[in-house]
Image (cartoon, rainbow, N blue to C red):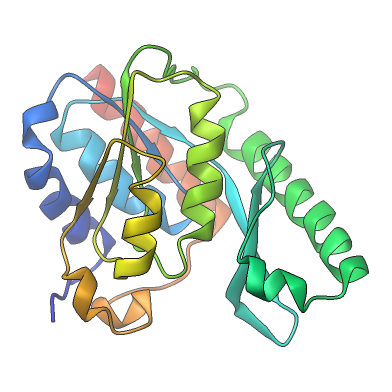
Length: 214
């Protein structure tokens, strides 16, 4: 099984797989954890780093298991089998709450920063791993409205079903681990996998800006 010391190491290895796009792409990370991975991809590809803020809706009985996902204003993306079994009132309330959290994060992370434009460019969207794929699907739907010329999803690990579903809506997927041998939890692939806080995301974005100006 492919393993990584931490998210930064995973990002450096991902960048090697994307080397042909050096100097010719923009990178977007999914906060929070994806920002650490995306920072290394952006640094090594000499690309600016932006964010796509997507939020999962965890199952009411298993909060870590995503049943749907949203961005601040994009479409609600769901596992339709799970959605059919959910209380519609719970789902509506959870959707509102996660859209509000996406808005809060966008304002905290990006207020006062120069926007990273995707229009007519090759956009590479990075996370530290994919489980159900719903959060990435929501992020891709949001990014598509920014009118990039091409979208590549780049992640260290992802299961086969998520890869296949994403290939229907993006141009390319770069994955380091074997999708057919996915172990069921992104954190299992990392030696060090702490949750990041808002302050750490801000520090990573500052570092990305310094990389672009140095």
